[in-house]
Image (cartoon, rainbow, N blue to C red; front, side):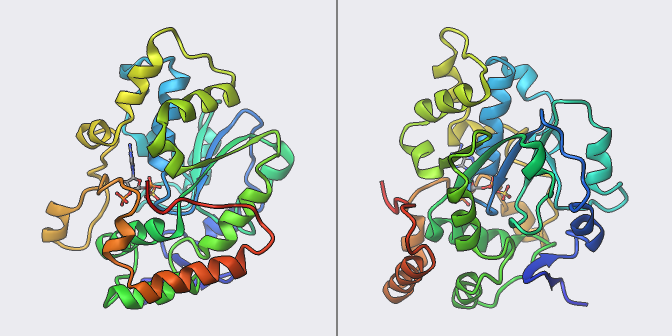
Length: 289
Ligand code: PPS
């Protein structure tokens, strides 16, 4: 059996079951939900940890009481032997912390009427592609590609996990001025995490206790999150014993790693495609810092 299939024009692993996709038509969104929405591998986990720390006023024991991928319920994926996430989410007390990579036409419909607070994180297409390539090659639930080139072709066709990077980023950029939406760039988090943490705290209306900003920035640094078992997940099913031992959810955390993968012509082709797909939009990303 194929490891995945295309539903509604988007390639989804079987773990994103038809039941989950259908449930998003009627899933009850709550106005006080807290959503993190991203294209896969754009900084979901990083932003989720920032939000947890802010919600708990910089109390890191409380923020990290449970592993991050259980704290924020991932709505897109059914876990074997467990109820699907929309059923589990319905039983959670408010405020619920939810995350999804589903594209705009497949995400929970009530997002548009209940208007919960949503933080969208965008990451430049090239680094995002590289990070997702490693995820595809490592995770049991996702298809492997024979080569970087094969994967690259699928990525620019929008035929990878998450669908089209271009469509998703453009959709959320166009909604960036909605009162309930905050659009954040991964590269800005790398450049000045303190400013982004402050922006997120203002968006939610959660003041940062005196002296805590620096601590939150330190706690959410790549090195600290890599050392932290509550954020550097070990619970994902990886493809082989060898990749299992070497797989690190916190892989590199850099801006510019794409240069180690993209050929010059691939990089130029993405730039050209970006100009076509994002035509008329003033969304820009940084590719090196
Ligand atoms: S997922 O599986 O879609 O939820 O992955 P996601 O969390 O969106 O993205 C994982 C990438 O984000 C990097 N990351 C960070 N970078 C810098 N600083 C911090 N603190 C941080 N936390 C996570 C993570 O390393 C993945 O990127 P790559 O490029 O693969 O390292």
